[in-house]
Length: 231
Image (cartoon, rainbow, N blue to C red; front, side, top):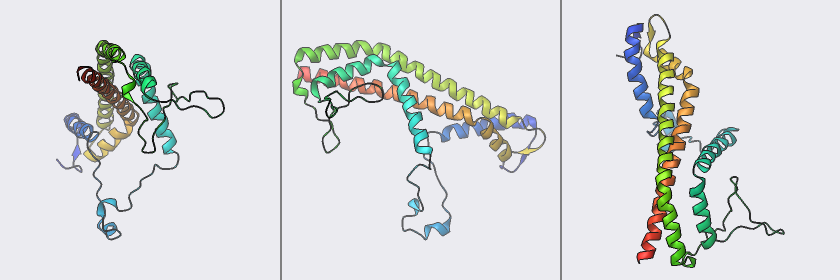
């Protein structure tokens, strides 16, 4: 069925499921932009024709605020994981201090900032850790993972629920027009009706992904400590 073909209300319900499924899969796929042939003459690298590399005015601040909100949720849900990491870093890294006062500089979440090398890597020395300290950190990570994995599962559930709400809103907007309306028109109305729910679903998916990555990082840290103890 082409996008220009009209649908009655009965057909719209079935078509809505297919359209929503296609749009949902787009979320995790790279954006494919069709460049006009005339624009390819302006550069030998057609994929970068007039490519915008910066956020639009005002967007950068808004996006950064959203990113910090997502990070804030992770910090609130996994405070003990960040505590373990910062206690370990306190032993192997050097904190950034404020000129004049000597106070330790902190990030937006209140954790210490650490000195970096010109390369951007942190200045750290893991030989400062004693075997007893390594064993203590490994035990705390191992026992903490049980609770952290459960919390990560909760963030995944919230992401799935948010996606479900978005799909419901999209379906409502898609089906709501009466009469013979084209698939393209229904799709655009569905997108507009569910725009807020889609952004919320994206946000919750990002939080879930961050929680998943935090768990993996703690697992790798625990494995590194374990390997150093048995070396």
